[in-house]
Length: 191
Image (cartoon, rainbow, N blue to C red; front, side, top):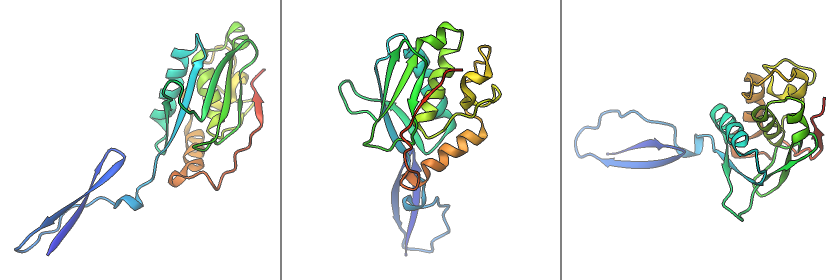
């Protein structure tokens, strides 16, 4: 009697079929691929964000470490990207998502906020949060990434809290965002 076991490897699953002629013993199993949550991959292009590379990398790393069903990856040079990131002289701002694969939003990382003392990594992570569908939560404490500038210039927290993580997880549940419509408004993060 054939015995089927699903082995999870990264984000893909491989079926391993074992044929046994004698008595089969029960083997541990993991849910089949159809029951596992799909991961949405969103590409970002920061080729026009000179001076912000380290902050963007840290902001992306923060989101990738804190949510499991959406992954931000750098687009290949000249390749398509869902999130276009540019450096500007104004206040940071971004299109409110959640962005879907094949669609595009814009993030502007403004030097005016940095000149007033705000943390670059927090700015980058906050603006990426807008792309993932999170609105501002102003006023708010430093522990809320989406409180933005209302947390003050001393705040350097670039990590989404449990509520923010949960909302992004919900926005990309089961690998789809069809139940959550992209807002499309541009949110300016001036105090």
